[in-house]
Image (cartoon, rainbow, N blue to C red; front, side, top):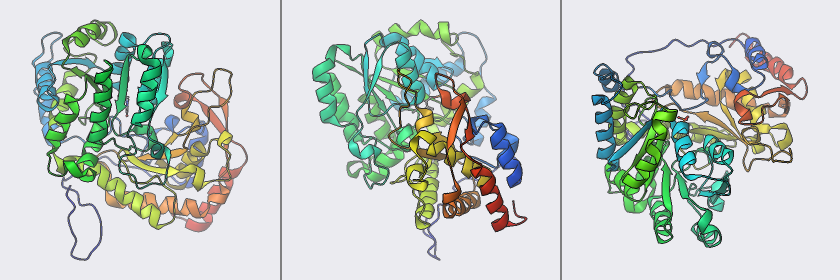
Length: 481
Ligand SMILES: *Cc1c(COP(=O)(O)O)cnc(C)c1O
């Protein structure tokens, strides 16, 4: 998707693809929406698809696939061992990352499990720009600890800084000075998920790699959101203007010892795995694949998905393909800003992020503003987002609440899935909600699992605020859904 100029001056992203298969959507009325969110324990993870109009929960496993991916699925070579599909996937990875070895895993967190079991032990410290939920859970389960070293700008929601996912290099050096022997690897997360899909610069990636090498520490990149990060390096990093996406990808890969990813995001398919050029590290991890995932030539993935992934990875080298997500997100972010709605800036990858602390400052963090806002956006428009705030954190060991650094409602933009009018509808309903924000109240847990509580936890509103929101909606919209 290029930045194509319109004669009439309108600034909108133009799709460079066409729809060949479509899925019918339903928009249920506001009363049904209020009932559905209550049935789901005010947790958008527990909503049923039949009640959802725009599913902006995640970009994971829900990206539109290309005709070439679907065609490739038909030639998948289904065998337990030695599958030609596996060879094609390994070759595709070698082609873009230059890596000789690939360990397949059924999705990103499975790759994290293998990495954690191999390298993390009690007392280990894993420096990273920012944590991801499943990553942190695997590390802490094994007695390790996560140290977040993102630059201060990274957690400022309102910013113009182009690379908010960058490491604070001084903090990294200081931590290594103190804890060198307890650090098995440094983890760099591309397109930093929990702070709004914010990228690292190529310069920062190389600097972290140099520091790690000086100290003999392994570098591991979580490349799940690399696609968006590549787009931002190409468009925002002066020294990379004239580099191709392929060249940038290769420079990143050359700076890393290990790259792992969720192919539910990178590669427009479903699966994951770990790529490396280091035989020693490959051999250390290899035996865990048949133990946790499946034989070494499929790792729990369907061969069809592996074929699709090989093609999808190749398509990721195409700027026309990878720009669609960031440009749609930029559009949505810009339109919300025009309407005064507080969002994370600059627009990142993955989705548009509403800043709940500013949207509903009257809701205390202990009453989960991002979680409340998620229920309100669903009631207002049948739009399902994901809470990325305190509900997504784990309580401290003493049982006290760990208040998140930011309270965000993520409205993910699955790649090539939504049309611009659907995005406009989302902006419209969010603007209505913002004008009625004083009606929004808080939530409290009624069922709270001790680990990854955001997946299964159930909550209730702290008052009848959702009923009042429904009444106001009917007043303003009448018969309209
Ligand atoms: C999605 C994601 C994961 C986990 O991948 P799954 O395929 O969902 O298990 C890990 N890291 C990041 C940055 C992600 O976005």
